[in-house]
Length: 187
Image 1: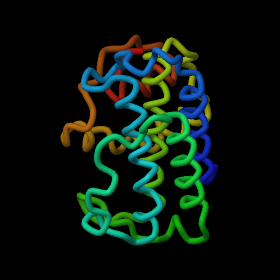
Image 2 (image 1 turned 180 degrees about the vertical axis):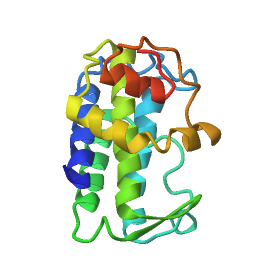
Image 3 (image 1 turned 30 degrees about the vertical axis):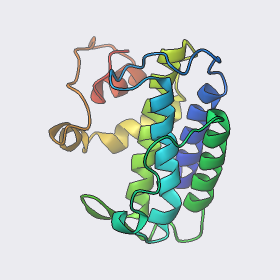
Image 4 (image 1 turned 60 degrees about the vertical axis):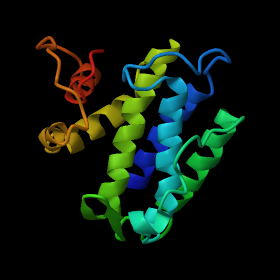
């Protein structure tokens, strides 16, 4: 499967859960103790807003603080929908995977950046589902792709403090449970 398709499918996974957030669900706790549902969705909208300028060659400094703060406003679902369409459009542009993306820790190919986005959207789709009591089952093909990509990056992410400690799981745990554990989550 190609990287833009993985990204689109992860956007869809997250978006399906956003569409089911009940009116009173935006303040519910998530598996990340620092975020409620609104903060989680704002985080992903923030990532979506950064995607077009970074894939177009802008640096972190170029973008500056234009995406800081509350990006959801009075229409959180609308903000999600708009940002996800813009991100998908940028990811699917000709040559986007080959471009150099300037991130805070250095330059990476567009493909690597989009794989990071794919993984974050997928894992946070589970976080959101858990928070709002929605279907927690992630697309098995996406779980397999994310597991394969993340296997060689897990230790780097953990050392950087980007993910929690890996919880103990049963030896016969399924692929989704194993992936979530890699990201420090107890399914």
